[in-house]
Length: 254
Image (cartoon, rainbow, N blue to C red; front, top):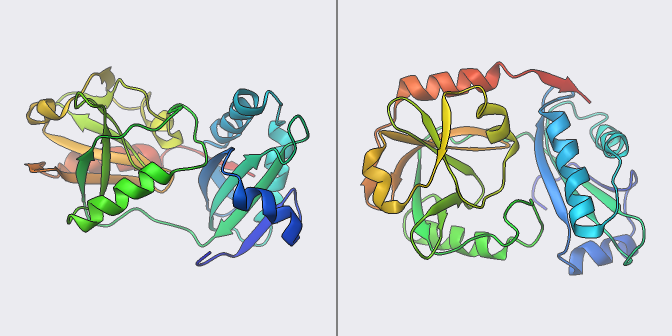
């Protein structure tokens, strides 16, 4: 894996035998986060996500403090990092295993994104699960067509989320988050209650109703300049406000 600093399974460097299951079986869930000076924004939300998804997929609890200790151990000498935490169950009904991958820190794109709409929805969309073949396939297709990433839609053209982002639109007054099956991203969860937000069905035909758009994920916030042929002006005032709102969210000590 390019740029990998450390990989641990259950708090230690994995043996080849321990890597066998997560390499070949794509059933599990994850969270991705940025660490700065040993701190994480929305740490409680990340730990809650891991706990609830473990119950949903395995009917087995993952104690938040155990996950936190494994995360803390993996970044013990890397205060700034991008981290991915995968949870899986090597034996049916057995204990869960936690894989933590530590890489150099990541930052949002400095330029706005152009998105290509594609007819795809993530299965079990509310869980951040492993096995993102469809997202990767359509993301690559978008790049091949001159875009930066894919925007996922239903067969009826209802917008759900981007391939690796949540998306929001601005109607001049409110930030509008699509009211469709999608992953409730941590950055979205942090921003939604702090911005003048509302939920609504948003279709591709509705795009002219909005003056701007942006995407959010664990890396941060990025403006959207186009969806297919529809062009959005980058609202610098809006983007500055959204970024400042996120910047003001406290960072939690690991």
